Image (cartoon, rainbow, N blue to C red; front, side, top):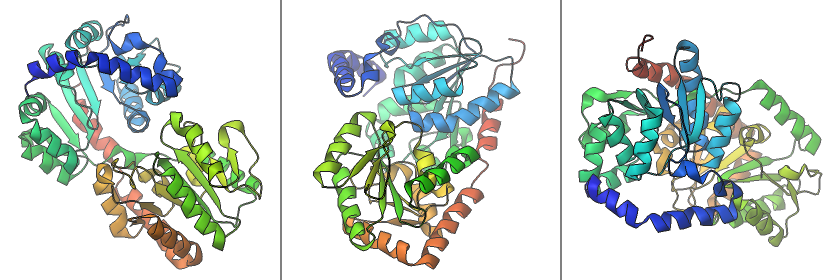
Length: 428
């Protein structure tokens, strides 16, 4: 498929795109808002740097990078775009003081040619930094036509994604060859980009920005305080983080087995998407487990079996209040989510077999002894029970996670070095 055919197909599918956002808006009200931004219909100012960070996870990884760029280059202005409302919320929170001054924020328009061209004509960036694997053919084509430098930062490319690009090589290769630099996370991913036809000269292995996450001491103190309030200082507490429909019931069934051995155990279940919060609450009560909802500040007393983490931006803190973490999206065919946050908190981690989006990070933690891959709920129960009984095994796994995170820090400095040479000069 060529870019021209892609553009025609996108226009033909536009009614379905509108229906998709309308459907998302039924479950998540934030998707009903700011539709003009989705189609490039807002008024924007020009900026030196355009940074696209997709959703909450990519945005949290990008924030230290953006803040460092802003501090080192006070003459530059920035436009930060996201795709999801959760990513947007993180941008607004992190750059509240700069919004309307050095920073403007909006959703990235959908990849319709007219929408993208109008957006780029207004923003007129000198450099566009895209996070991870957020590559859009029309955005890249029209940005390059405007002499904009294009960088893929914190780039990752799973085997599954590489196979998809290979199947559409007539569309993907022209897009990839327009990139000026790719700051890739691992050597394995660099080889996948090379196999797709990317020139080795533009590839630089820099590690993952997610290893450079900083743990706010106030979050650790808040976590310790919460655990004391719950009366669970010496009770088993575990987190099922970023779980999806299809995994809610599995997590609850695992917890029921755990309660047979540890009646005071607490499960903190945090669904990946806000529209699933109520679904998870219903699933919990249907399983006969007592529930407290974090969003309602309900008391977590000795009779509560499950705390529903139905708030945004608190998952890292909730990891700090636990002993163990399971990462969702891995017992269903989703590809998984980042296991580094609980690992950086010193928690042993477990994932299911479908973790291809974070295969390299998972392998590092697994080889060190900090992460266990389980194939089903029975293996997860067995692993949990083993960790909660064997303190030596638990301590070794926790230390292994902290060691892996510590040894792989430094990606921020390396990625900044890649970006620096493409920034516009002080005298524009």
